[in-house]
Amino acid sequence: MIEAIDIGSSVLQGLVLGILTAFLFKIATNIIKVLIIGQFLLFKWLESRDIIIVDWHRLTFGLTKETDLIKQADSLLNSLLETGSFGLAAIIGFLLVQRFSK
Image (cartoon, rainbow, N blue to C red; front, top):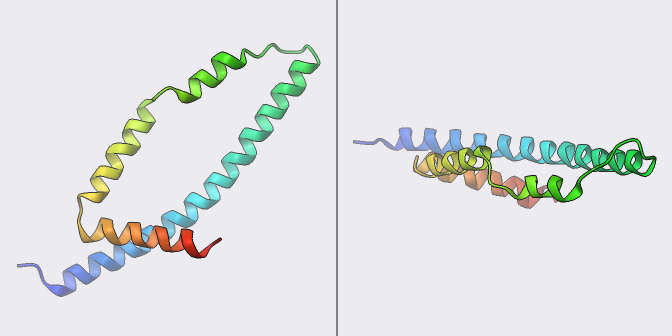
């Protein structure tokens, strides 16, 4: 039989994990945005100086192709959702931070 303390502890742990994940996700996405923009600006500048030749079609096709990372993230999300109260609390914590950090 599952006790209320076990469920409460699981919910609290999930909520804390969700909040921490949201903060880390927000920081990481901002860093990745800056790096990608900087990379494309550098590529365009080097291409305009005839230092490099960039095949933009092949470069963007690589971004739209499904990779193993996307499959792994999908299976991780499925595993998280299957854990019940922990997964639900983690998602609620993540969404709370996303909602109130804007």
